[in-house]
Image (cartoon, rainbow, N blue to C red; front, side):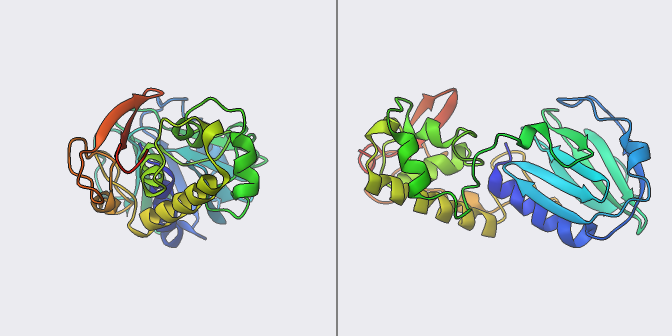
Length: 269
């Protein structure tokens, strides 16, 4: 699943291609995603100019003076900028054709993504989201008080959108390893010092992943169809039974909250 670094990578790749460009045509090839693609987009966006491209959590926002287009990549979605004459491929669901003959296409084999429209730029999906992990607001004065009395595991908590957005499974495992915190530790048992270190490592891990163009394990590719390279930097994620880079003991894999967790039981006690 594309996580925060992958969505940020996509956003940064779209800006030089889309910003200030004018839409010529909207094509809905296969409307059946998680939510049906609104047919009204065909009329609403004709001759409209892209004025900004932003990200909130794992959502992309393409902004216009009349509203905003919200795109979620789901489990397997990707966006690519191509010449409009390039033939469609399987699972191309949605296409924006610009007057400069470029085409933005959403491809989503598993169809868990979606494209929505909001006139006033206040999407329901964005209303109750927590702080961004790379923001100044995500600090120990914010996080540590939230940990008190929480019986949920620390890994489960930092992956909940109501506490902090965008820290997906890969980056939660990696940040906890760097912080030497066992992912099964109850949130209420995390010390203030551990909380501060975890915040630092979440930020560092995400920043490095963005710089590397995200992580490609299976589906993700950037707008040029290229893989992200942060997978080469992973210390624990996907390394079950391989030797830890720090202590040489084996990496364990367990299931937490329906997701795979990777950690070193010797380093993360």
